[in-house]
Image (tube, rainbow, N blue to C red):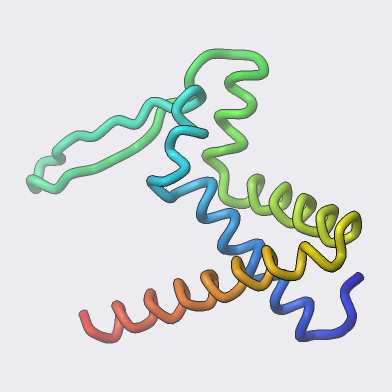
Length: 117
């Protein structure tokens, strides 16, 4: 399935991007909404602070915890991508490559933003 360092690196970047997509991106907030309550407050310095509260209990709370944990979601994203690559080797290449390119672009953008600031 993984044939060398290049494919391993591509899978790492794809997992990184998919995890960020699920845990942080606005576009997937509808997935998190049944499990998270996003709260915004202004701190003593006048800065807007956002945090989440997990909704419900039992399975709902467990999924909410999972979706709020970058490390936990990352493991599940890696497992899903590996499973897709194993079950659908030809078609998964497009998805994994797309996610890897987006992941690398996001890393580059973060580095450039730190340099500019």
